[in-house]
Image (cartoon, rainbow, N blue to C red; front, top):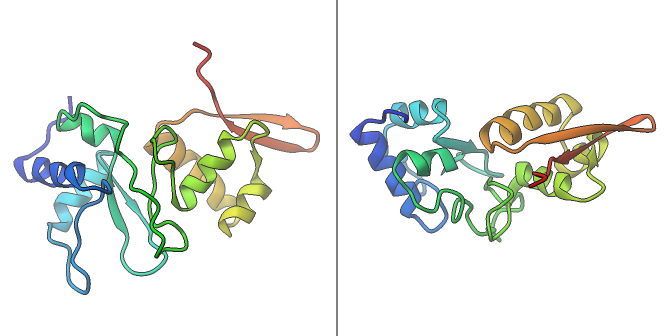
Length: 168
């Protein structure tokens, strides 16, 4: 079990209890929490920083974060609903959340969930990122942070990536 401080628990509880699984921020002012506490939670994989189309990044609680505070719905409610004011969605989440993922990382997850999967070119087009950034997102955000298994197969001259389905 991950050891967390009282301040870290408070921050995670605040994110878990919010409607969009994000830490509260005040428009036009500093966030109402310690940056060092948030940074330590990000390093432990309990929070994830999601870049917004405009303004500061948002901090969202992860499944691991919910588990650290004893959240009974570790997967459910992890994702915020789509934000109509943000053209990129402004949020990130796991593929199993009931409301569906939003944001650039989540758009990659949706592509990877398709039966035909996605090529690097498909993912580059969907995000506007370069190939190395797409590969980094696959490895870092999707595999490590979200804990999703990504499988790849060679189809013709291209490699096709998919979310690996548990055969159970």
